[in-house]
Amino acid sequence: MKNRRVAQNRVIRLRRGQTIRLVCGIGIVTRRITLRPGEFVVVTCAGSARVFTVGCQEFNRRIRIHLARGQQLFVHCDC
Image (cartoon, rainbow, N blue to C red; front, side, top):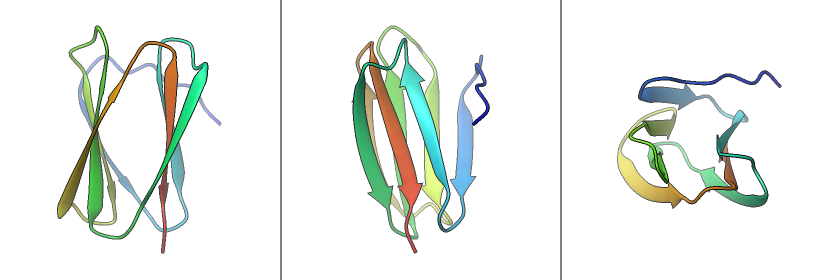
């Protein structure tokens, strides 16, 4: 898995079966979420103005998640 640091807001579209990991600081606590087609999650990180929007094929139903320092989130797109 490639590690990438992002300096700006991102919109990421996952296809069926794909997973992405978002980390706020050093990932100590793990959270997982599985999206169904049409759902998307808006993720923010404590102490950062960056916003990540991750959608499963489409962007119809929003879920909001705020990560504290030391948390990582795995987002999986279900079929």
